[in-house]
Amino acid sequence: MKNYITLFILVLCVGVFSCSKSDDSGGSDGEGDGQLDPQAIYRITFTTNFTETTHPTDYPDNASFGKVFIAAHNSSKRIFNLGAVASDGLKLYAEEGDLSTLVSEHSGGEDDTAMTIITGSTSVGTNTSVTFDINVTPTTTRISFVSKISPSPDWFVGVSSLDLVSGNSLIESASVRLYPLDAGSDSGTSYESPDSPEPGAISQIQGLPFSSGTIQSTQVGTFSIERIDN
Image 1 (cartoon, rainbow, N blue to C red):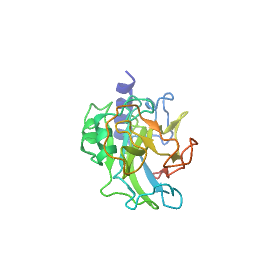
Image 2 (tube, rainbow, N blue to C red; image 1 turned 90 degrees about the vertical axis):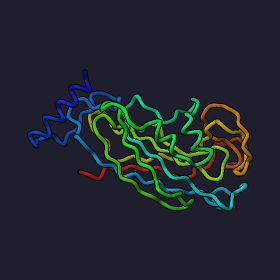
Image 3 (tube, rainbow, N blue to C red; image 1 turned 60 degrees about the horizontal axis):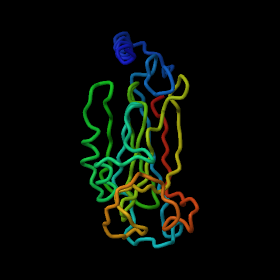
Image 4 (cartoon, rainbow, N blue to C red; image 1 turned 180 degrees about the horizontal axis):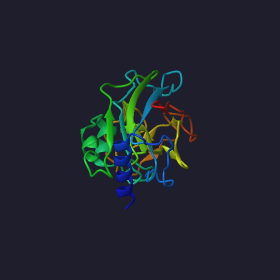
């Protein structure tokens, strides 16, 4: 019923050109059921910090990050979860850098489950920043992001279902530190480890080659998001 109410309010706002700028999430699940703007625009910045200086152990000569995948979606969707098994699309991307299956897994759907998906056109350098703009609607107020670490057995960085709704408002900005994640589909402790299937759960990598011993791995980048339409 909430989704029908949301659609009715959006149509009414557009029809009379008087939609309020105040936001109402209708709860903490990011499913706006009140006065959320029909559309908000956010700028996403992916900043990388993954160099031989910051990560000297076994650092590969051809290091890079893969073409990014970004999605705006509702609270019922997940691109990945720590401790869960990766989808076939995420496994393929983390291992080979192929985004096609990941995109197809999350494309389509009804109005209340639709996603807005953006993919990068090229790989990303290891000490740079790239930006992407994405539209958000009252039913797509969660943001997810992934980018493969290359070369690697199946490693990536990502943000899972970042909630853009806080209380009764859309947030203005947020920043997330990125640490290396293991998709759980290949074993290996070095960037150039050979293909060795070993099904497991998604986890954050601890220790080598991203840090010494078993301490938390060194940060490899930052994911930032900022609303730019108001």
